[in-house]
Length: 296
Image (tube, rainbow, N blue to C red; front, side, top):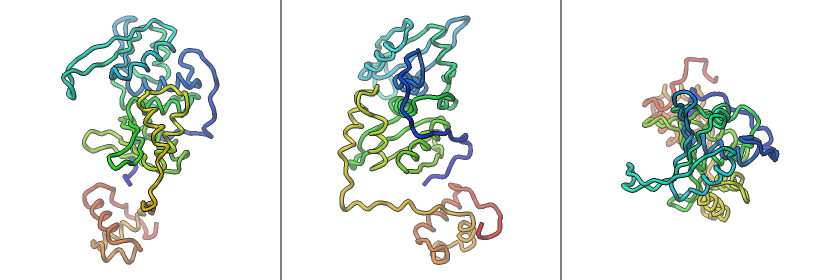
C-alpha cells in the first residue's frame, strides 16, 4: 500500500451520507444535478477571466458525451452555447469534440464563489465548503477525470486521476466510510498526479452507490457502472488479507539486521514482505524511521 502524502490537507467530514434536498436554485449544491455539474466543472471545466467584465466558462469533451453538455445548458438559466469542432491532438489527428461556453458574469461569479478558480486550477480545487450532495459531486468528478469498467482480467474497477490532494483525499475518506476499503494518497513521481483505484467488491459497491437509477451522468459510464453489479468473486479467488502496517520500531529492526531472512523471524513477518520493505527503505520509497525508543 502506498504511503500517505503528508502534503495532503485535512480530510472533510462525511457524516451519514444523508439524502439531499430538492432545492432548484442555480448551483444549489444540495440538489443532485447541480452537485454533479459542479464536480464535473471542477475537474473538466476552465474558467477564464478577461479584461473588465469579460470572461467565460468552457467545458470541452468528446462529442460522444455531448448529452451531458445539453443537460448543463438546461440547468443554467443564462444564455450559453454548445459548438463542435474537429482538431488534431496528441492522441488523434481528427479529434471531434463538443464545447459548452457560458459567458454571463453573474453565473461565473456564482461558480467561482463555490470553488472553481480562474485559470489553472487542477491542484487548487477542493470539495465544497458548504452542504452539498456528496455522492453526486463525486460522480461528477469521476465522470470527468475517472474511469469505470472492467480490467483486462475482467475485474471491476472505479478509478480517479486528479492533481488535487483535497479531492483525492475526500474520495478516499468517502469510499472508506462506504465500502471499508482503505486507500492512501501518494503522488505519481512522474507527473505528480494521484491515482486512486478501487477494484472487486469495493468497486461494485462504490459504482452502485454513485450511479443510482435516473441520476445525471455520462451514459457510457452509467452503463459501465450497471455492468459491474453482475460481478461475483470466483470461488478460487482468495480474499486478500489487507495486512498490517509497518511500525517505526519494525523498520529499525529490519535496518539493523539489513537482512530480510534474519529479520523475518523476529518480526513475525514473511521474508518476502521484509525484503520489499527493506528495498523501499533503502531506495527512499518510504521514509526512514525517526530515532526513538524501540517498541514505539
